[in-house]
Length: 166
Image 1 (cartoon, one colour):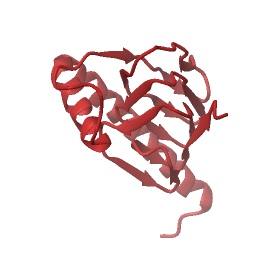
Image 2: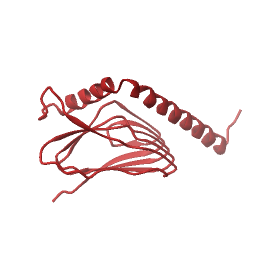
Image 3: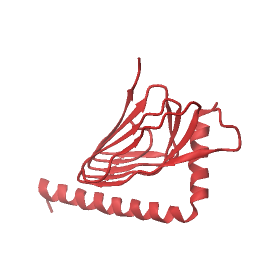
Image 4: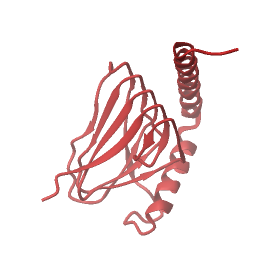
């Protein structure tokens, strides 16, 4: 049985939406034991960085993100500038069929990304030139390009742009 292009795209869209719903369910299930999830993600980031200024008793803040569908939903930005290294855990962003943007602009920020997921869309992360970023989870890319280093991309792209470089 032959499939035409429209049927194939429709199947991919249905699979992508099912994946999105399942990812949202995973995110909701994980919030039940937030301390364990935070520790797992932060440990992965600290291991990725190797040397860091935080010692063994971690103090961190959490940056909440949003769900964006077809480009609708609030943008995410960290505009705080600290005078010292700050560990910031970035909650998962879910993006479907649109563009999402996250601005991580604290020059002293050490950003730990908790697996963003985007389906049929683009994720653009603006990262201050002096800030650091790592993934708190593994990543996967299917039919797209992944450059953000974390999360899951299906039929989309992810890129990191350095800003504030003099």
